[in-house]
Length: 147
Ligand code: ADP
Ligand code: MG
Image 1 (cartoon, rainbow, N blue to C red):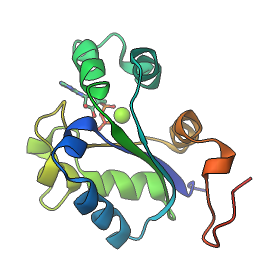
Image 2 (image 1 turned 135 degrees about the vertical axis):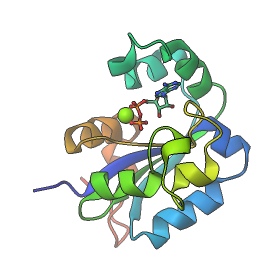
Image 3 (image 1 turned 45 degrees about the horizontal axis):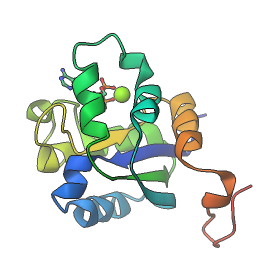
Image 4 (image 1 turned 180 degrees about the horizontal axis):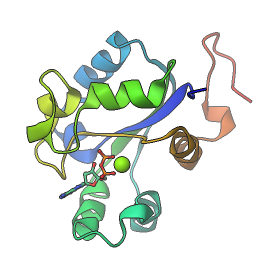
């Protein structure tokens, strides 16, 4: 069964460009519930850990510089089929290939500065949610802490 959570980051460029509000509206209107959310400024070692699967890619160093260049917003989004549905809402990694109306089509500056992150599997969604949030920072619909 598909998991019910995914992890998003509104990346530093989209925060700087004042797109937080519009992106969160699109997330809400697509039927996701935000069960955890915060600003974070990643240290280099944290960004490297988050993106370690890409450490041998040519774009790795530039990606890390970008991700530590300012505050980002991290959030856990909840919905049936959260991973797949959120990847659809954000669109392709390269905004020139993203469908019209997707978050990346609307707000990405480039393939690197592509506005948002979305987990690529249920397993990674759990790992990434744990990377940013402790259990006491996650809330149910009734406002109870998710333990
Ligand atoms: P996604 O974020 O869509 O899952 P990847 O996991 O492949 O994409 O890549 C992680 C991030 O690395 C991308 O969101 C983007 O910021 C950056 N990136 C990916 N491919 C490139 C590229 N060819 N050039 C520059 N940056 C890239
Ligand atoms: Mg990815």
